[in-house]
Length: 565
RNA sequence: GCGCCCGUAGCUCAGUGGAUAGAGCGUCGGCCUCCGGAGCCGAAAGCGUAGGUUCAAUUCCUAUCGGGCGUACCA
Image 1 (cartoon, chains in turn blue, cyan):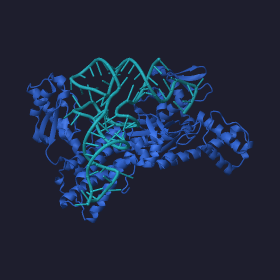
Image 2 (image 1 turned 90 degrees about the vertical axis):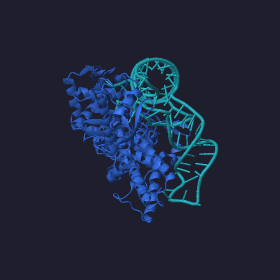
Image 3 (image 1 turned 90 degrees about the horizontal axis):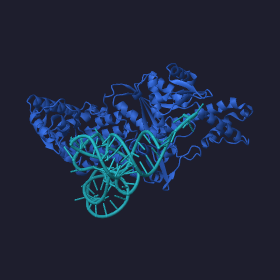
Image 4 (image 1 turned 180 degrees about the horizontal axis):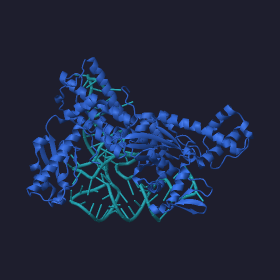
C-alpha cells in the first residue's frame, strides 16, 4: 500500500525523494560504482523518531542483495550521488543498519500547517478511491430480536469504515440486509402465535426453539390492543403471516431507531424476501444448474463446492423445496454486483467464518472475481460482570442490548471503544468498568484536547487575537513540541487512506490519541495567549489546525467533538 | 480430528519486514502565583515456545502449546 498516498506536501516530498534516490542509483550504475539488475521496492517514510530526520529510506538495505554489497556501503555511494539541492534536502546521514535519513530545508513543516488550514474540513479527504463504487454491508441482524453488543461492534466498525472509504474518495453505500425470509421467520411466527394465544388466556406450549425474549411479548400485547382477539378463530397458516408481518415491521423500526441513536444511518435496507419473490433465488439456482455446478442427492440440490477447493458441498435447495440461506445469499450478492458495486465488503461475526470461502467460491461460479467480495470477520465481544463471563443468549433472552449500552456507557465512549480495537481481536468488555469509570475511556482524552483548544480559542477571541492566513508568521513555530504536533497533523490524509484501504478503522482511533498526546505535550510546553503577538497568532493557527483534525477524525468514527466537557 | 482468528507490560489492547516495541488502567515518584489537572514529566514491567526465510522477524513460513469460533437440508 505504499503507493497509496495523498497529494499533500508530505506526499510530494516523498515522491521527490523517491525520484532523487532512483536517479542516484541509475547514475552510480552508469558509473559502474554499483551493479544491479533491477531496482527493488523501497520505502520513503517519515521516521517514528524525530532524531532520525524528517524523512528516511530503506533503499540501501533493500538493494543490498541486488548489489552484492553491505547496506551501509551502498548508502555511502548513493548519498554521494543524490542531488540534494534540487530535492530540497539540507543534510543526509546514514544510520543504523543502513537507513538514509534526510533533513529538509527549513519551513517545510510550516508549509504543511498552511496547507492544513487552507484545506480546512477537506484536509484528510483524497481521491485514492477514484470514485469506485463500494458497498459496506454490516450488522444485518435478524429482525427477530434486539441488537446486542456484537451488533454494536459491527455497527461501529462498519459505519466508520464506510466514512473512511468515502473520505478516501470511494463512492460508498451502507446497507443493512434484512433476513425477513426463511426458517427463522417461520420460528418467529410460531413464537408470536404462541404468545398471542397465551396472552389471550390459552394454555399452549411455547416452541422449544422459539424466540423467548420478552420484547416479542410486548409486540403481541400491542397487536392485541390494536386488533383484539379475532385471530383466535383463524387458521394458523392464515394468521401466522399476519403476526409476522406486524412484528417484523415493528422490530425493524426498533432496529433502525437503535442504530440511528448510535449514529448509524444506512443508504439501503435490503429485504431478503424480495429476492425470493422476484425469482432471483430460483434463477441463480437454475443458472448454477445450467452451468453444471449442481447435483441432486437425498432429494436436495447441492452446490459442488469441492470444485473450488472446499472440503464439502453445500445444500442450495432442501429436500422440502425451500432454498437455503446460502442460495439466497448467492442471489443477494449477485444483486449487489448487478447494482454496479465493484467491491462489496461484508462485516460478519466470527461464527460465520465457515461461510466465507464458499461464498467467495460461489462468486466465481456466477462469474465474478472472489476478491470482489471482501469479508471482514470480527471476533466476539465477551461480556464480564462481577468478574464473571456473562453468556449472551437470545434463547433465554439474556443479553445486553445496544440501547442499554448507549444508555449506560454513552454513544461516544461505546463507539470509540469498539472502533479502537481491531476487528479480529476478541474483546473482553467489563460492564462494571464501562459503567463506573467511563472517564477512563481514551475517547475523553481525545475529546478533552478538543475542548481545551476551544477554550483557548475563546480566550484568544477576548484577547482580540485573530490570525490571518496570509500574514501569520508561521516561521515563529520552532519548539520541538510544536514541530512534532505539526508532523502528526500532516500525517492525517495518509492515515485515513491507510485505514480505508486496509479496512482498519482502528488506526484512526489510535491516530487521534497520538494527536491528542502531541497537543497535550505542546500545551504543557507552550502558551498560546499571552505570548508576543505574532507568536500567539502562529500558535493560534497551530491549535486551530489541531482542533480541525481532531474534529474530523472523531467524526469519521462517529464520535462527537464537544467544545466543553 | 480438520478449518479460521487470536496469544505483546499485572489487566485491557495498539503496533504497514526495519533503528530504543507503544497507549490506557493499575503501581511508584515528580509538576498548577500561568490559556481547562479529564492534563504533563519520569520509573518499574512485555512480543507463549521451538525452528526456518531475510542484511533485518512482534510482523512472513513450519511445528508446538494455550484461548475463541466453526465444522447442519441453522443463519
